Amino acid sequence: MSLLLAGKESRKFDQVNRIALPTCFRKEIGETAILMKSVHKEPCLMLFTEQSWEDFSYAFIYSFDDPMKRAKAQRRLADRVEKVTVDKSGRISIKDDFKAYAQLTDDAYFVGMMDRVEIWSVENWDLINSDDDDDDDFFSGINYSAPRRSE
Image (cartoon, rainbow, N blue to C red):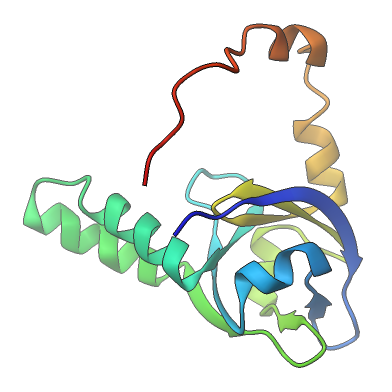
């Protein structure tokens, strides 16, 4: 299954830690999703469809050759993950410890990352995107005619 989760939109939390998924992501996400604390030590949450979670978790776990390390990786993932249900209004609930991990307060950015959506606090998103790289220079070396990934 090929996903194209792209774009960035902001949303606000309600009083009971629910936040509405942007409309552009709802169809791809579906009724159930996997929410995970970032594995890259970044203060954000990662929202996967069930299929993209299966692909990600399988690749992550089987990147370890040693069965003991593989089991440790599974336990570490289990401690960072929660299955969430999208309600009829397109909202998900985010637990306090997940919000604290990502430093989420009232507002959040939902950022499409092709196979997942990242959820960032506005402040942290602005911080990671305020580096010294000039966007024009950063994108100048990209080869748009590079071979595409095949299914």
